[in-house]
Image 1 (cartoon, rainbow, N blue to C red):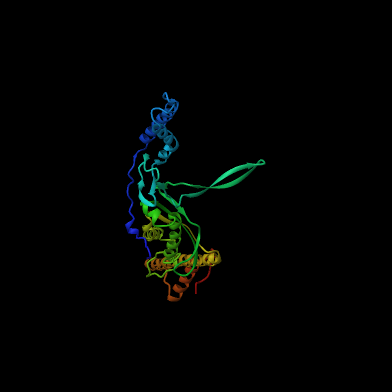
Image 2: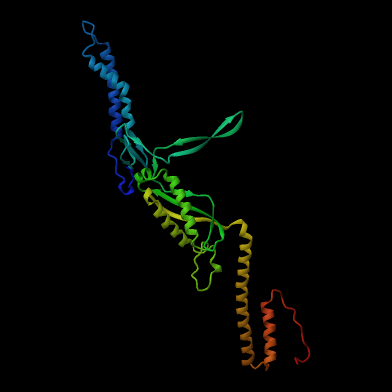
Length: 336
């Protein structure tokens, strides 16, 4: 029969624990008493030379000295914003979240599948520094807000243009039981889901909204960063809900065209900017020409026929819309 895991049945529960400091004091006191009792019972003989008062007490003291250290294994120290997920013989018993010293079953085991980390240690050999990487493992689960900074991905936007995108996710664990038992490694799980979510969400937006039609609402990766960030956070939250993870924030930190089309898209942006600038220049020039003709007519400066008005409009537009300063020609004779 196939056994399937129902993630909805895994709920976090508080681990029942006693005061750890009391357990340490009591265990140490018994250790001292057992040591004294071993000396007294071992050196006490009756007239027949037998151990006095009983062999049982001596064996009990020796047994405690040999096995009493097991009790110390049940002492757990939890710092603020840390948690211990405990199992007893394969069964989940609970989670310690409160800060302090606690005493639980000595045979309880702490589990953290994502606790492996690589640390760099500098080793001086023959006077030369050398880096040595050592794998360390922590059984405690951090409940702090953590940051995931994935590598740059090459993704096609809505228009099919290849773009380079990088995402940063701020997240934390809110359900330790699901984080440990529902996924193999919650750190790798959220990293993979962040890459997949970024690819899906970025493909729904164009890179730049300046090339959209006038009747289309402008929503782009570059121009709608707040909307894209909210979409990323909501979509990623749905995917990591079964791992007991809360997404605090998800934002794009790097956005650029892929190198193979960067030059072409830059020319396209420059062309669009030049066209937009020219349109504003032409609109302003036409307004100025219209104002000039109206002022000349209202103030009766001179009477111009249609041909001269057309010539004047042409000259003014050349002067106002030209890239270089115009060189005027002074006509000292008649205009006809």
